Image (cartoon, rainbow, N blue to C red; front, side):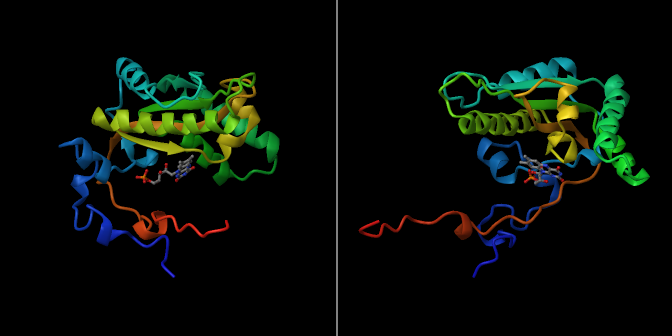
Length: 216
Ligand SMILES: Cc1cc2nc3c(=O)[nH]c(=O)nc-3n(C[C@H](O)[C@H](O)[C@H](O)COP(=O)(O)O)c2cc1C
């Protein structure tokens, strides 16, 4: 049986590719076949300005959206608000885990301070709509991917992170009330280290031809 996590070198245009060729903007197809996220902890300035954030969110809004519900919101956390974010996340964590250790809290503190720009992407479903919740959440996932593409098109790197804070109602309440959910923390900036490939599945573990069995 094929290992689904084997690096897909035989099928991939990234075979033999040097680190600097990730997010190759020489053509649209080159970009898509070399796309890589950055790691928030490796992101340094420059990051997008407020005007660039407006532009990349406007770009990401061109996302498939059944029912034209726009079930997504983006909240930009300014660099001078990172301490407040860290305090909020750590308070929420301590409420849930009063015995939290120093390292756990330091990890949350770091998460709140990484990268020059941080966007909170919220899934905000319209509950009264006949469009299934699943489809509204899928649209939010597509929005996140579009945000990353838009940021890469501007020459930045992006990273989509969740972790414990994304599933805490108290952290969510820092930004929005239910039924909103945190779909991700989208970090944006410039990588201080060359991007490296990560394992990709074998194409054959993802793509197959339909075998229709009569009677089923
Ligand atoms: C919904 C979602 C949540 C994620 N959360 C984390 C996370 O908390 N920590 C992490 O290291 N990577 C997380 N990732 C993975 C990274 O965003 C990234 O996709 C991964 O490092 C692979 O890199 P690539 O985008 O270049 O393929 C998450 C991805 C998704 C789609």
